[in-house]
Length: 81
Image (spheres, rainbow, N blue to C red):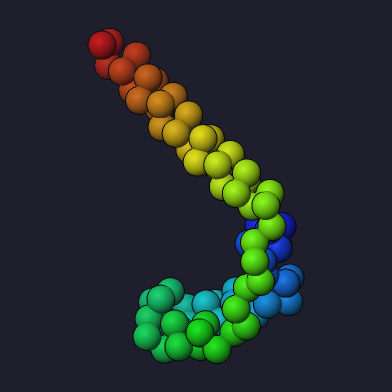
């Protein structure tokens, strides 16, 4: 819910979106099928994201890049290269 709020969604709206996708999955629909996407579009639009959302996004991207580099180095080490 912190991520949703940082992106400008209220906790309630985020819960509604999660429920829409889960309902689609229960019905055997793809996560972004046309019907699920139509129902998501009916949800309220987010407000302007908070400034710390940008910082959080950069932190997540940095962490992902570091993880990829560590995996690559581990594979290289295990293969003796």
